Image: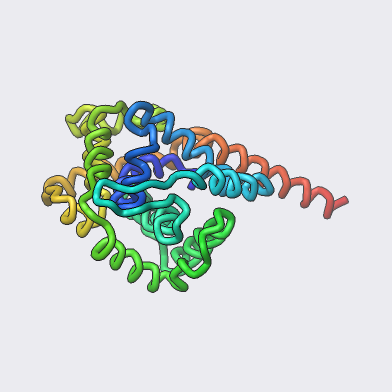
Length: 271
């Protein structure tokens, strides 16, 4: 969650989240993603990094997020009531993180997760969900149960929501993510697309096939090959960047602090 490659997948995560009718209605009415897309993303990333790496502050961030969403409620244009803290949509927003992490590594990592790594990652996602006070009953018990849940949500709950269409349109008009280091931005140029087109291209390309089908989005074998080439280039570049460029700021500082604690622990044992 601190690796800057996650930036490539966040757009698709938002699309899938707002395809849930309750989330689509809430975001469409209350979010500033249209007027301040990268500002909204930066604030969301800061929150995410805080409850992943913040230690005691993570619990406070979980409480803050619950309070922030407490009064987000209303009725959508089809007469359906929504509330941001209802169990199903609140859980869906959080649980998409697992699919996004797996997909990030599949496209932009040196190799996919092993089954044991997926199980560990999923347990960590559930732990973070408890910090956010996602109802325990909403958690699929295992990775296998998760994928059944995910595919059922895509097939039976998600819809071609106007807010999802709006998010996709927004990806065409914004520049490259400001959190990406220069070497990763440079990799976009060989695709022959503007920065907004690349945002859109990567967002659409990393969506699951069933999600693209529900939105009526085309994706060809040639598109997939181009995305795979970009992914291989990113995966080859990342290990050669300095740590500060590979990780988002809070994650970078947390990694340095963890190493300092380890050094202190070893020194005390020697003493």
